[in-house]
Length: 380
Image (tube, rainbow, N blue to C red; front, side, top):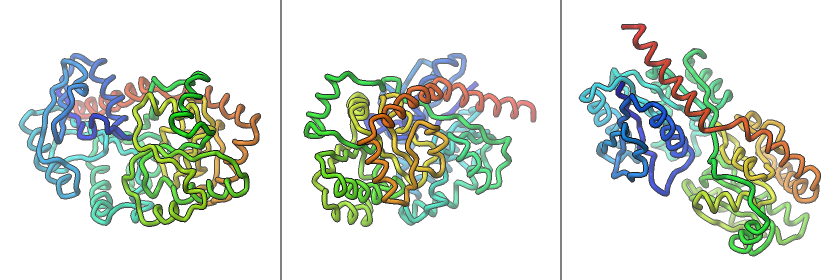
């Protein structure tokens, strides 16, 4: 069988949520199914480390698809032409984008529909593209894969998709994440937080990550509990808006917020394992991988009580209203001063982490692919 895979988000040193999903699942799928040929479709020069095995054929298709007009050209012309010419049996798209022009059976992984609920968080042209094309992608796909029961229900309701067409494959986590030694923790604090305790945020710096209320909550916490505790921010300023900038610049304790940018997985593991807690209070997530990464690192978690986050967190996190600065600040206080509660959450996280594995995710994704193939064959 010949399978084409949209791998345009496999970017060396720049993997983010969907990029990691693509990396972790496809690395396993191609190695576990050597009898099939996989065409990895890139939109630029690729790194050889992404050619996971001998049954992978990398293909570069122009143009680089990093703008709505170029999205359309890449998927509707370049990808469509390749699928037809190569006569592939199936097209798999881990970021949900499809070619509407092709007759090739397609599987779309749609992680969430944040743009339907908070369209103004995105630039005008990007949100127009998403809201026009993704309903069509959902209807075009032979099967849809998503990452939480929340997202499944959301896709079903927003786009009127029958439930039998949507499969859930929970995300996994980096197997290198672990609880660090006391020596590593001490060295990490010296390197990153001026040798002080700290709260940690991980994610791209964009509106739905709720940085505005997180900054305000940290400022309130510091006012009510004078200390040297820091707030460390890991991630790139992808959509650093005027509102986020204003909230940050208005902080009384702005100098206690430390921006680390993107970190390599080993450093990220150490920073996460060394923190007082992960503060992950987005107002919309399709999953929220940092939550389970924190569990694996033996770190307490403060997260939101909306969308998918309660489903992912289970009983192992403090759940807060992301729109309440006071609730977020109070959770910071509880984590800091209630060691018994913090230890209890960490212990529960150690149990909860075992429910998530990239091995399981990749197997379920492959099962969805095979369902699509079997359905195609039954129609012939």
